[in-house]
Amino acid sequence: MENIKIDRELDLKGEVCPFTFVKSKLILEQMAEGEVLKVILDYKPSVENVPKSMREEGQEVLQVNQIGDNLWEVIVRKVR
Image (cartoon, rainbow, N blue to C red; front, side, top):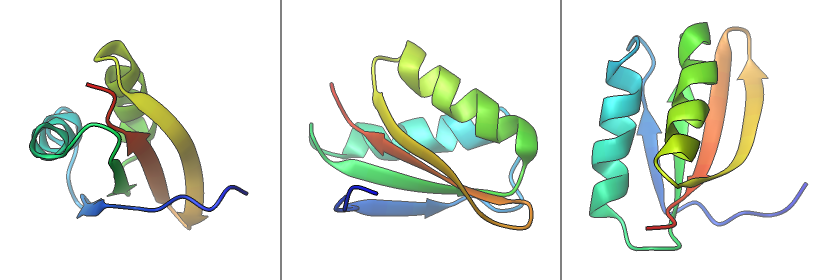
């Protein structure tokens, strides 16, 4: 697995759609192009919706990993 430098981490455990995407997008807007955001999710629909919405926004989804029981991380690089 590629060693990715994480610039910001956003813990969204307990949050549901569409707030998971909205909060992720707001953090990305504060970040510089090329920086990497790790989003922690525990809501299964968000694990599909956040990466899909990020790609639709033109961001680069680097990884989606299950990191525990009902726990995932989505790694996104800001493109623009």
